Length: 119
Picture 1 (cartoon, rainbow, N blue to C red):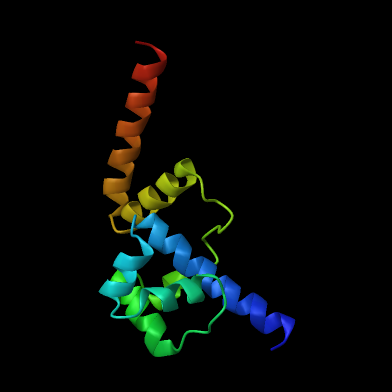
Picture 2 (picture 1 turned 60 degrees about the horizontal axis):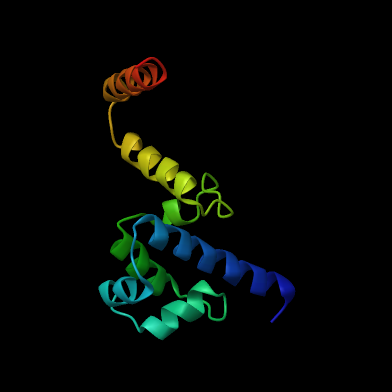
């Protein structure tokens, strides 16, 4: 197995881990929800095994994301702290709303920030 293959497997595993943590799921819970062995999921996340398309479909279904989400360039795998996780959770929720709803939520957030700055 060449270096690129190892890196590619690791990247898929990192992406799976990223979304699993984003959804606050343990490896065991994700594995059980995706009908797979928890040890195998650990191997996938560490890049030690390569997932099939069927396996990826089971995982993305269990995470309630699409294959496109899993391979999106919009995620930043190096961001693992709680603040970044919360930003990404909020972004995912906002992506499902209309532009008017996003504008309204933005106004609410701005008002909360103003109140915190000027109690």
